[in-house]
Image 1: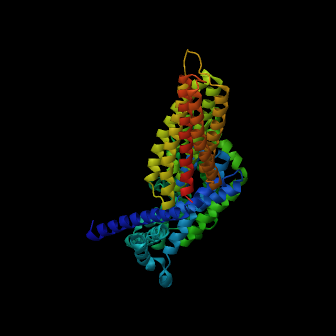
Image 2: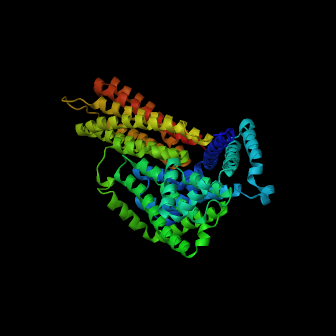
Image 3: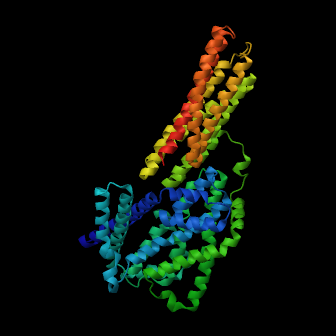
Length: 556
């Protein structure tokens, strides 16, 4: 191997690295820029499958990988955020969205006659501008634009490196014969496309390399390019299939839906193109350019979606036949298991969705704590020992959830987040801690009245009424604090502030009146101390509710 060969090999490897890193950097910048808009997509994933297709296309256009989108879908299904019926629409859309990368590559492969407007000419300038924005801009939005520009610039420079290094070898007989073989043998062409894509774990990258090779000359025939492109769609399923290993059945079914959709589409198009090429051999052996590959790639994915869209429910049924067993919804799980399933690491593929998922789970923890608080009230007022035991049991669940959610938040905090998302994650850390402290105070409440085998602690009728009144205020304060986080509602947060003020005032008033009752010996000293400890714990719960509302207010 000559020095020139080694140099070309290094150039191709470096070009491929810049191309892949450029895609990643550009995707990263776009995700940071979209921020909460990406989170809002979760809200419109209804049973309207057409909307789901559009959402899938948009998400994939942003993160530049249909495989990554499907991995997220597997995570969403596993977490219970999305049903299989919704997932099938998103998966169909993901295949359409992945076409955007091939068109970006086509733009970078403009011929010499268009050199004046060729992106590769301006690629170094894009990198320079992007670096300038990142280094010298204080605003996060401008830095995000810098990430996008650097990614786009590196993508085009990488394509140029690959094209120039491969140009000297494309005319060698071995390459000519190889592409001729791929073109004449559909199975081999599809297999090569699937294997290369499976190894690279990105159909966008494998199709981009094919387009680069096609741009070096006429060695890539139309038939070989089409069969390899078809194979790349199957290869893009490998990532999700690997991701679903060890996951519950519905998550596996989501990955199988993606594979079934692409395999059926490949079979339909593969047979149609094979017949067409047999009647038009000159067209099959003719060269194809980068734009031609983009056109086919786009037509294939749009037509497949149109053809199979009416049969979406049958794809779901087919996945049920392939992956047999009962749905997870039919199996009862503990709250800890549900939480662990909800915090699916596959969702970390998209930081925006991971942030939204974390919010949902913090709210889930809050509602469990809210129900436990209600159970504690009933245990105190009704002297119900079974409910006291239930509070203890649920408190252990809350502690487990705190640990799992905190670990998940740590993973999210290490992702590429924008300033707004960093602020939300920091607030969620504090929120989990506050909710856990509410759980502790709830446990304290029942411990105060848990007399085991002794006589229950009985408060006077007046004390009972006072407890009911302050308990209701505290419960409302905590309920609205969870609602404020769930709906990001400033109105709910303001209500928390109002109730917290009332609790503070009432706690002072009750303390004074109860001390007066004690001095007049209107109640037992032991019971009186317990009463004061109860209202003290209730006041602290309202303080934590006020903290939770404050985090939401700080995000405005």
